[in-house]
Length: 292
Length: 292
Image (cartoon, rainbow over all chains, first blue to last red; front, top):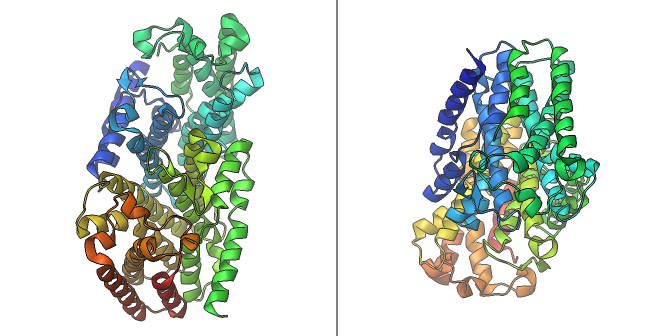
């Protein structure tokens, strides 16, 4: 199967499984609608696909990872809903569609986020084909990656840095926490499920750090060089919002150099792992070359 | 040890352990401060104390339940922070102190709630003295009690019922979900940790439902008959906010009758459980007779 075909079939699988975890809930109609609205709003499903790709690379059945892959996407979606709120980034549109609070109001948007976050842990705890030890390791790692030591902390640092020119170190703190830690979880979750050695998991953590930062640098580049239709928001919005980006710190050329450095380092780490690394190498290229 | 002494020592134990789970986090200063502000804002610690009391009733060491007892209090605290937000109940004061968003701003308040919720699952996953199976059962039950099928769903129904005269059935849906399910979790968590039989856990679930509803009826009565200083908010605020309460549906006398019915039923259920029920019987009286 070609890489584009792999991506297409896995995205379709995630797109079809993901909503079932919310549809089955016995809960007020409006909150289910609101949760499903954002879940089905056209995400790339990068995090769940990375998890499945790691399982594939270990020669494991990808299906056993579905609940965990979907749990990560629930967390990612909750974070977008809360980040878009008027008291945070105050965004009216995401991926070309009105944001959750524009459709359902702020209160339901807050609660939809809370509900998605809560449900994500249930998905893992109730996953049928994983051992108890694997599930607890996943829950512990996910809560670290998503909580105050991870994504929540990154969002705090991001807000504190608004309208300030940050140093590269401060910028990397933000993106490591806000973006890379959850991406890294997706990757190590695959290895945890495959019961890889601690040594190998640590290597993949480092691999994930580099593609996580690369992902963010590419985001900043796309904000200047991207196609508005493809990225789903106006080009140049970072500069307009006076955000510190890799471009404002390193210049466009410097950012591109840094991007390839991170991609190359991530590929080099993969070469030292005892897995079939072909698929993950393709993901590295995808992250460096993506158009949205 | 007398019951008041039991309460005093256990509240002190929870008060001293609870903040340590947040203080140890490697996270931006402001988010830790905000989480700790609400955690230390003078809660009654009813939920953690119930969990410890159930363990005690099974003759178990209470200490093994601390992380789970604290996890429930983290969830309770997150729900108060989010409920107080301007887009929800818009409350400026809670327990006589400015609410989290009045001190730290809305964005940090949303994130502090998110962080507390996330951390609660980590506390359970990392609890040292519990078996893997027990921990996963707890995480699954907690996420059901706190998520869209539980507390989050109850808050949605509560908001949808604003400025409407609800039926008793609608009112009970709200309180069962918004309050009773998390209280019930605290109680059955003790039984799960004590590895009680499913039959016994189901009995305690029913016991918990009745004291959860009793707790809420008493809340509504205190809103009319309470001492402002003790309850920490103005008397009569429910009527002013046009909230449907047990009093507006049943009258004050009817509500008092319903309260004793639920208390009596809960006590009757306790008599059928194979535990030393003295302590929990005292809790039933406390809930019926509390002044704040």
